Amino acid sequence: MVLAGQFLERSVVVGDLDALYHRGRRDPPCAIAAPHPALGGSMLSPVVAELAWALTRAGHPTMRFDYRGVGASRGVSRHPAGSQMIAELQDEVADLRQVCDHLLATSGMASACAVGYSFGAAVALEAASDARVGQLILIAPPTRFYDFVMVSEVRKPLLIVCAHHDSWCDRASLSLPAEARLEVIPHSDHFFSRGLTEVGKTVAGWLRDGDPLELVPDPE
Image (cartoon, rainbow, N blue to C red; front, side):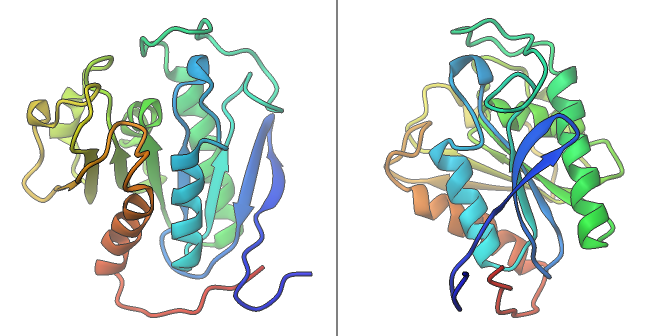
């Protein structure tokens, strides 16, 4: 039983992917891409869980998921265990697009916001040209391991959130479009061991800025 003010993510299967879904009424629905599967990244990663909680609480439909070959998701990951390099993203991009399809079908909304943390930021950026993606949020993009040059070509609403002390992310190297917004979380590192709740508030606040509608989220 879900009581007033509580939130319950539903366990769902999207194709071969294991996912956690929460319905909502505020546009846009948000698909959350996890960190590097070769380094233990999954939809249960603390930053991903915090993003899902903050966006759910703000009223957005949310879905976090495990890439193929991770957790209970079927398939095989292309990334060897322990590798920090980011390459061969086509499978994860396809997984994210499949999740967006499911979100749009269940919410009835026109486009989704792709939210990616760390490795997931590269996945979300690769998917940004898709018509299913209307907004893009990149959390701690690891510029040390992936070339984020395509950021300069994004022509959709874009938020980038970086940690102040992140040796994996050189925010000065990011060439941002004129309308993009960059937020820096103070006293934090790549894993946001400090400032975790601030990440969620920043993301939810940015989406709210473009949508003045105040909603009480559906607690189911």
